[in-house]
Length: 452
Figure 1 (cartoon, one colour):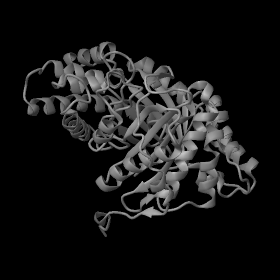
Figure 2 (figure 1 turned 90 degrees about the vertical axis):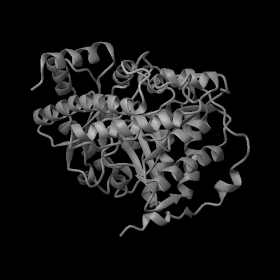
Figure 3 (figure 1 turned 120 degrees about the vertical axis):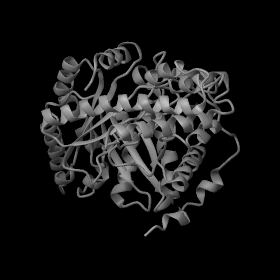
Figure 4 (figure 1 turned 90 degrees about the horizontal axis):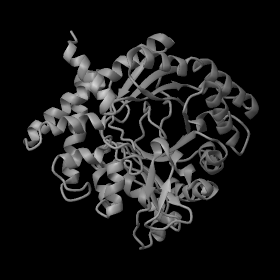
């Protein structure tokens, strides 16, 4: 039974420690929307999304009101559009992004994800058309998100796709220069992308998923930070147990919301993603959790070890709370979305190299990082290749969401507002990677991929 003390504790976590459900995301399969006529396909996409997600926002608001649990975003993820648009005869897939954006406006959701392609082993003509359409698609739509999976532990890394993505990111930044390169904040390049991720910008609805599903992403860095204050000075065994217990409570809340949304919408419940997703708000920072463990500043020596403990303890606590944990599930380290990370980057303690090392032990990867607008496409591709290699070798999901801020140099700040926050422009290495990227081809899968 839930006792009075636990209820009051949960109220305090919501009211004072920034505990929330970050997103209720409805995944929708669009495979039955394929059509040789692109206009017909777009019409089918719009009709299906607006029909299936018609009550999503209202249901989320009702649950918020009845349970007193904030649900920050209501979102939609769809089948990777390259798989749907490939049946059409058009050479430009921007119209499909516009159909997604129109459906988003009609349903009232915050984001729609799935303008995506899976090219870890090679690109079909449809994949390449979609990738080349990304810059215009993200510039000409408001809140459509895009992702491309360029590598996996089983397939290796598609370096032709990596090279292309560097150019796509540069073009996207240029087309959205008036918004500080905002288009790049809606674009993620993955290795080992998962099919049930509820978080943007990387969410898409995998082909092995049901026709429609509800996935929920919870948050709670502030809750974990507050819990660790109570065990200040204790050894790391106590720290790990404290994080586990806190993650357990957060995950149970997320599962409650997910099951209630599933029941009310008549849609299967998929997973709870228990990632610690920070915000720019004071007291809602993963960096501050690491500093609470004894680091003077996030990024200093010991940061990777502290993050490894945090990520592992979050996962262990979550899987005890729910048998349906999925998505990414761990600790996110998006620079622009975490006030502690921003402060550490501005002080020079947190660098891209240190962030790369941290991604070896946490969820996802180099996230919401701004670099000088003059950064070359080849350098961006090399950063993607490094991060994909970490994911491929370590059998984990890694990603890059990077913004070459137009007209800005190191020391500047890109302002996005809301959950996306502000990103200090960080330096990159000046040595050229161009010849490396021009080689193309595929980096083979590691030996431990042979598991059959």
